[in-house]
Length: 226
Image (cartoon, rainbow, N blue to C red; front, side, top):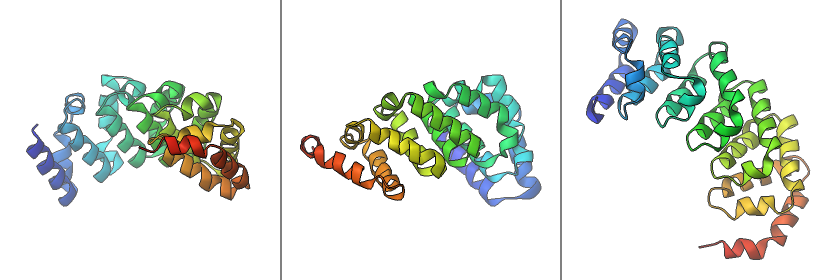
């Protein structure tokens, strides 16, 4: 499938409904693995997942599992995007096998160039227990996660979407490693996470400590400005 064909099929999926939409999506049956690996057809898979009733697009799930385990999909440049759509639009009870495998491999996926986006989606759209498990993984290797370009984005989403009971201790642990907040703030990819932590610190009575650490690190932060 070429780029134009992909865009046309996506547009049709958005605009038609009922039997026409179902007939079009059924054309993917038996070809999901091939579409997954295509830079253009994978967008059709994503669109089908996002616009169809989950029951009508469920055939995609077993075909994906025939291609590989969920953690392998998460590390694929196109598979990660398809997984994101599944996490976002499919009922969580249908995704338990996927989620379990992703969480079993969370330490690696958080730092992976593609897998980190799937973990971010789990934090945004997953259940409380999923968020809690990802937070635990982050806390087990906090310095490594906070100073890695990929997993720092996962930390940002944890501070945004975890429950207050989980994100406040997470923020406190970052502040407890003096200099870690400043390390993140000095990096272009770490600044959004540092900014998010400041917001959490205001909500949880840790603002003065966060502010003091940034003031102390001002000379270093100024040197990091291009």
